[in-house]
Length: 403
Image 1 (cartoon, rainbow, N blue to C red):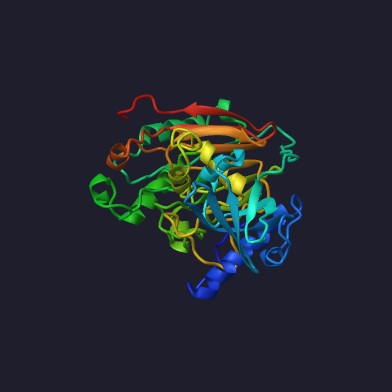
Image 2: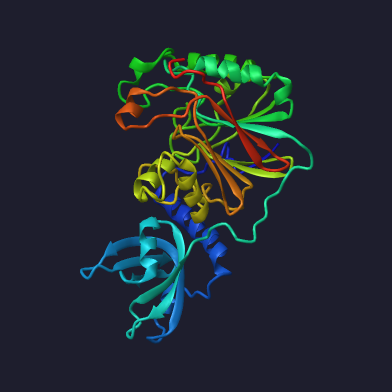
């Protein structure tokens, strides 16, 4: 396995103002490059001195979105030279796209300048997106990977019997092609993650939680190659990108010598590029977009929007905590063949422009918090991907909801 995009040991952020400036400059630089081949754009300062009535295009981060008194939409685009207002008319077919726009994401807007050249009347909005010409890579032999997440050892709702069945199945001939196990975060339930969490813990000490998880890990075949990243319940910083675990926790989880990297990470296996991201920003995407475009019941649709925007946390300053770094590690700087996430405890998968997007469910039964927000988790599932074909099957290991 070859890993890239891992923040572990590379964090330079100090929380100073200049770190935030550097982060957004890098975001603009990288994502604007992905758009420049598709529009004949000019910097906002150059557009501001053009003659009225001309066709023009700008690329930048969305600084503001607001409705006008006439019901139209004013979208302010910011680049390194300044800002420029773009007006999207309410009766234009493109107006439906407003529901998909998020502050701080990078877009290109094409249109025609008003007579005084003070506003760009939008005719098209482009996202960095996955190129239509993209063709996925595949392995040269039949080999499979198991993709799981959100195990939550330490919770009194941990589905231990389902996990044991999964571990036993991995030892069978039926699973002989499974050579890789990729875990997308939340190995343990954690401590103090939400109010009154202690009332739902079987194991109250965080180190004992990881020791118990290590025992779970020992149950899988010793010849599996294992890679895991942290999640928001794990004992690492909450702000993304999250570095991998410290040396003490690594030593506890040393069974079968797993590769431990940061969240997110790109891993190349048998020539197949897999993007692993725990998925905290999916909460924000689902909250911001209309139900018909993204929902917890279909988490892969929200993941598709992250690919469309080519960023894992496009809206800054919301519920997703982002650490200011010199580089923006949350940019999807190359196209993955597989995009694997978790966090929302729902199972879903689909192809988006030939990228296989998978949200792998969880190993924790419904908590009181999930019940309060009407989330019924998908428990005890293991998506199995054949890397030579990128075809997927789902194995279920929970026989009854009360286990």
